[in-house]
Length: 150
Image (tube, rainbow, N blue to C red; front, side, top):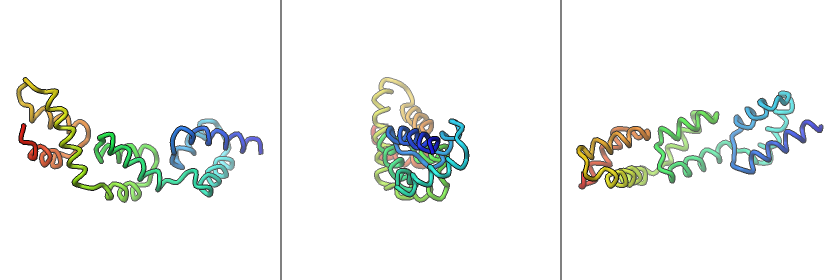
């Protein structure tokens, strides 16, 4: 019972900083060398009390990352790394508003244009920068076509 309480305390400590997926909690408890039975009991308790909810986590994660200017490709990669199911990732990414996504690419592109003033091939430089950030070439082209400054 003491081991269960210690594992639960550790999980609450982790959840204090940010929400986590079930896989993250399981991985962290395994690193602390807790037995499988304790890990299952703790994750079951946390899920039943809605302390960990992968669905809510994914939607909030996507929203937060979009605000920071991350591409959908990068968001998908990070969610897979965190152990989220592919179907859940696809569902969350499908909720992204296309107009807002393209506006974000334009905004990031405009910010980079000012960095590249007085240099040759501004359009190519901005394209490469956005490509490195994980945006799709079609999306970048569409966003850059709307910018008359390039």
